[in-house]
Image (cartoon, rainbow, N blue to C red):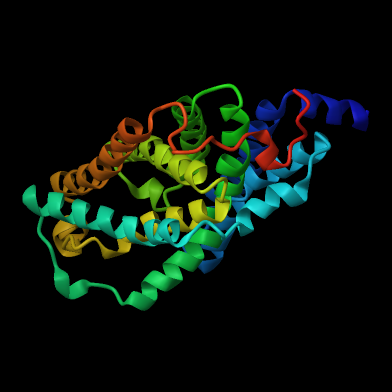
Length: 293
């Protein structure tokens, strides 16, 4: 029986990966939503635990396929990517922040520079984001699903498939009123979906360009997420008297999405949809899977 299940998982790698990733995450985050637990550090840690669905799914499939878990996990420790790419990893999020802030101001959005957070908050956000706040997902989405897809499809098509799967996987967060995602109005949630699809292209570009460094992707992912902390929008104006201002919140989300979408389009134009990089993209072997197909 066990060998039959393992054989089925090996034969249906992507379906098995997605099914396990969703089941693991939705079980934990669905239980949190049903429990009514209020926002807290414990709540955040459990949400982060649920975020390990993609790497759990990838680990099961790599194991069932007789692949190398060491090779797959090793992508998370691939730090020799060159100074140029580390500079891009750390500096591009700040460029995105400048563009977002500029567009917000041009759109008439009020700013409050006095509320600018300490740089130490950024360091914490980067560490948290890499380990529990999003980066932990990338060993599954980028370290497994992406290279498997790229064996048959272009980098752009693979990015879209990963992006749609990735966006749908977040559904429990939208249904839980105690999460950040759950507190957003519907328009903001839809714009976030657009951003995550564009972001999937950026993450693919980073993964392919660094020769399969999930570490670079995870840190880059955390950096983009951390920029929200430093958005100069006047929080009091966005939520006057505790009631969100629909127009200003929509403006913040639109201006937040535009630079990500524009960057994704620019990358497709520069590098082309086939590879989204100046080198051949990593294939299934990067995820530790045996080259038997």
